[in-house]
Length: 582
Ligand code: ASP
Image (spheres, rainbow, N blue to C red):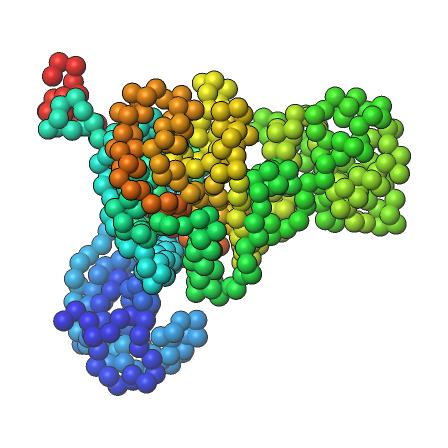
């Protein structure tokens, strides 16, 4: 038997007990006549003691040869510690060792296995298995496990059935780029890895499964942005005989349950916001509503003076930064420079200081008097001591820029508290979005999303105005989940593909299986998917999803530990018919 207890378990009440422990050597202190070893495993650290008087010579000598990360097994007696360590749960006892076995030696690890390690990101990724031995990484993985288990238990109790769907499927041009897998048995043909199990979960509804969920890997060959993984995990769900309201209530229930069980936070009913309102009020379809700073549109009160910049702008819009009047001129100038970087691309920024006495001082005093500025303050809900920041230009761009400013300032002012949770639903997304490049409409969510019945009549005449039965769940400025009520009849689905520029043949070739299924009694259905990696990192109060993935890829999509992707040999290429001369 390798162990009778783990290394986080023993207490004063166990004194005098004979125990066997196994684990890794965290630290050795050799005083010559006495050696202490900190023995570590997943559960904690227990101190071992070897000394001249009480340990036999051979064992003491062997203890002196131990190195960091050696794997050892010891047998000994639990004794009360002379100098107690209150920082760890086992800190009142130690093990007086009488038998030591080295189970495996270790090279000196390339970085310290401590909470604050000396290893940089790259080296830790290369030796991820050593990184996982560190408390913060291990704790994150255990945290993820807890979230997954809560999700499974909750959904299972609610009657959802976990069904696996295939990973080798067919490539479709919609959405992101597919990862493809060559088929050896069908030369020249390829599978694709699923971007999501979307069509399969719909087919499960046609199959009468009624409520489905799966915690499932999805694959998207997108250009990698910071903190994006080519493979990621979704909590994928679908329900039959539901309307949008049923879905929102069910998954609001799940999220509320998670916040309560995992974070101990009770949240009120989630606010709901239309896409249009979110864009107008926050410049963003995933607003962070932990703080206010709502947009105030100023066209009415800022145009038609002599200020050309505003007069020529499609939109003049501002936010009131709480207590922003404390920013120095220099700080504001810096902020303007920050806004003018190409990543944001603002041309400039007008600002108004709201003084404590209620007077205003603006960067455009030449054009606007106190009465004008009072109207700006009213529209942006500015209070004495605030700073009003105003941008102008093309409406969409300006909103996006102001949204970036809003988030940046909230960050600087410490308003984005990771321990606070502000979930909401964003609903009524547009069904389609126009793509200038390809000069055609794209499905904003995906082509299986149903239009709002009341907008059906616009489908031919004004497709851009049609709203979808689609919704996103937003948490602290992140889209953590999204879904829709689906089309479930062949005719509407055909019409949708037509709108998206598919020929009849293309639609049939790619999605004939789904449209056929719709002809055999498809029930009304809908669902959504959560991004598990992101959800876990937000609940865990941390920024990067990589910290919650056991073996993540780096920013170039590489696994630096196993060194993938990698070339394959000639023979394999030939066998797969990937060589031109095959
Ligand atoms: N399959 C969708 C996605 O991956 C989610 C859904 O509509 O259920 O975003």
